[in-house]
Length: 296
Image (cartoon, rainbow, N blue to C red; front, top):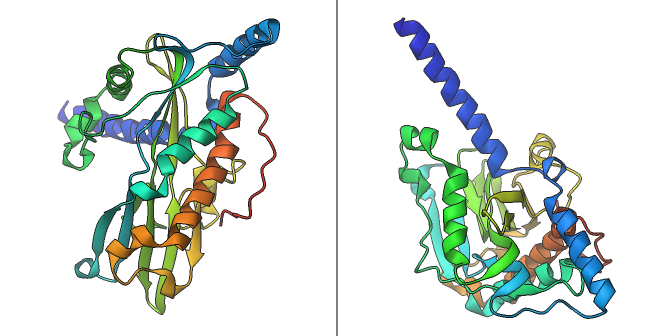
């Protein structure tokens, strides 16, 4: 009896691990068509009246919440853990929050009402999942947590759908290290070092009635390859990144905030990934946009 119970527990843990990974990096092809249908109805109403749908009293078709874009991570990973260094630098002057909202608004059809919902990070501190025990992770109801979180953020509004743009997380190659959000990585290798600038965003779309997650995906430039496929192809980071020369890494981490090359590189990758991913999630045809950013 003991061995059977142990086996069942191990199987439950394995199934939980796979389901968690699937939820965290849900791909576009498995998404439900709810948002596309909603946009079709909204667009029809706009075409019938010839005027954009109004936004009044917190009511809207889409509420947009941006919960990322204020920080830039300067990360060094050495050959040993004693060489690892991390510094998070505030970047309020980069305007990533406004850029994210602007690209989200551009992806939504004209005439569909959009409400930007302010976000106060002090009121909703991020959860430190590194402190969770295995038991906590196994029995957590992630969907209920996300619904409760967004319900509090959107309190006082009444939108048919809510779009949240937040940090995405990616492993670094085959290592146990990860990167999150926006930053620059200095990775020591046996014969030198590699410098990677990355811009990792994640998009969730919620139903405004019960705050269930309708669609979710990392923001990608190469939207035809899932993150799993990209890893099999040897990509070092799951999401937009570019390799830079060694001298691009800031000598002092705090100088990164005033580096226009880093700022412009992050903005370009972020804008292109949102322009490629959001229209697919919303079920609309993306508009042509000039960009010289290439996802490696």
